[in-house]
Image 1: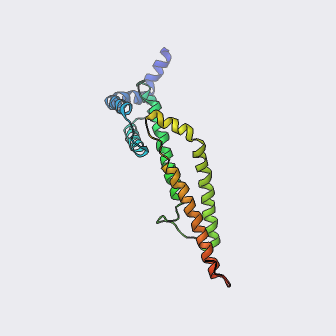
Image 2: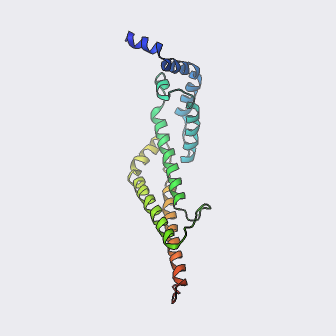
Image 3: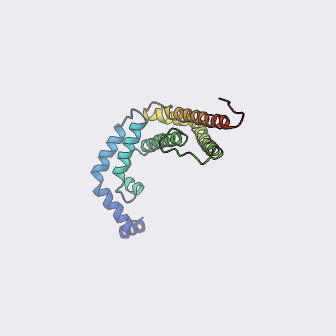
Length: 186
């Protein structure tokens, strides 16, 4: 034990950890209270609060090492908030990826390329949304632990955008068939 103590005293890293513990002690104690008292209204509020927490922890040389001196730090709650925020961000990105009406959607050179691209995005999004479905029970339990209402609008938005993408592919297919000799499928 004495050897460990002596090595820690000589280590520049350990000195920095000790300095951070002292420098940020008041901020960390206030942050612990804020996290412990935080009751998110929705996933966006949880994500915004987590952003504030992460920004407060950013100056620490090593978050885990500094927080070891604060056993009352609510690691579980922060972990749950990180999970909720990550899920919300992932669902927004999935919804955007398959949104053919988004302003930056770029049409491909021809119908076949466009259909292939939409199909590839649909397959990628589908496997991820299925994962979200498989993990929904655990996610719901974690939301309950946080006192957060379970919000399924993100998943619904992804599914609706998938329907929109399928409709888009059918529309370009019909438009192409109308241009063929003897066409007029519309």
